[in-house]
Image 1 (cartoon, rainbow, N blue to C red):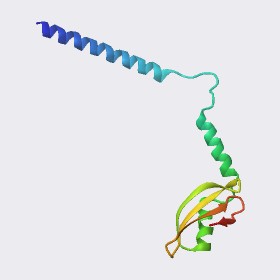
Image 2 (cartoon, one colour):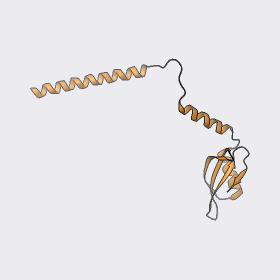
Image 3 (cartoon, helix red, strand yellow):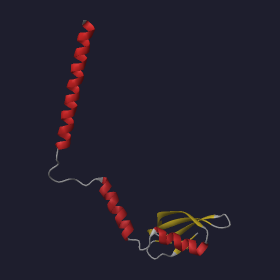
Image 4 (cartoon, rainbow, N blue to C red):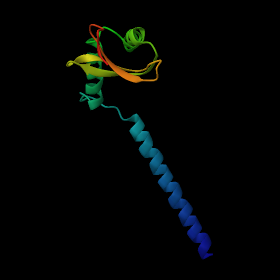
Length: 115
């Protein structure tokens, strides 16, 4: 008898907690923010990335193609980089003789800066 009573109390407590959670979730889902939203740090990062892209006139693919045309071989990696303080790319290339070289490409002019 005592164990049945304890089981019933446990079930009632469990149901009650479940109902409160459902009510809390419904309140959160129905909540709407009014007024002004502050910009998040993600917005700053996105703005910075857009600025970087706008200061480049050539794409990663174009930079890789320029390096491949000059040195031959296979492009392993292209990543954004600074070239003389300006936006550009660092292109890693596997040459036909087995050597790996890294070449900087100016993102504005497309000039290859070195290996």
